Image 1 (cartoon, rainbow, N blue to C red):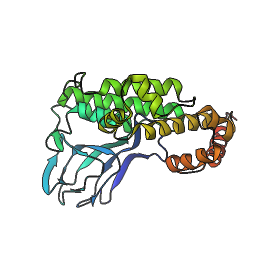
Image 2 (image 1 turned 180 degrees about the horizontal axis):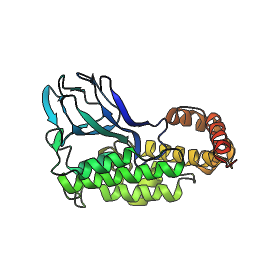
Image 3 (image 1 turned 90 degrees about the horizontal axis):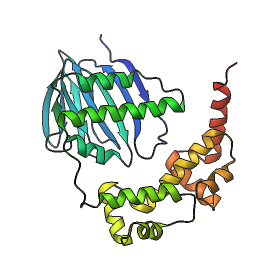
Length: 284
């Protein structure tokens, strides 16, 4: 093949899952010297090399890679990678992010040390290729994509991972706070209520969320409410105002502003697109 060939590739426009969302995935046979970067990504990206050769560069170091190897791109880290000029690689990849992404990546062990790894068998590669071959036309398909990503990360944990950090690092408070948000997001709650529910101060809760979730608790709450509102709008049963109030936004103007910020379009446009999709998916 003389040109890059995408055997399978998906790129998702919206990421409705707060905890973990697939941004893109695919299998690519690269042309000689095909390259990307130097640049940064805003999400995690894991590549597994299926065949051929190439090189990955990060932090001023270049890593030659071949079949059975892989590399990890971390958000906001400058990297580049390029296919060999004689024997260009073919690789499969998945890009993802979410509030659970960093914790899960920590458990794989791939964030420790070098950003490259070698697979002793084809287990992770096969799961990733299967993930790339899954359809993505319905909400159920998207859920299955997230389940496939979890299976892939679990396989990496089996190969390279470490045991979960013991209680005492504060993550148990974050878990309790997230459960409280899940149960009470539609009510008039704020960060003080969340902190009180787990028995710690606002400042301590803030530090723990930054450490374990990579965002402050107030942003997590807003994102969570937006994701719930988006799901309600996708159902096509509620108006924008009804979805906003149901998700804990009594101020519809504020809701419209934050919804557009996180979803890339006003809620009215999102609802219209959902209704159009619903009509197209009805059996004829």
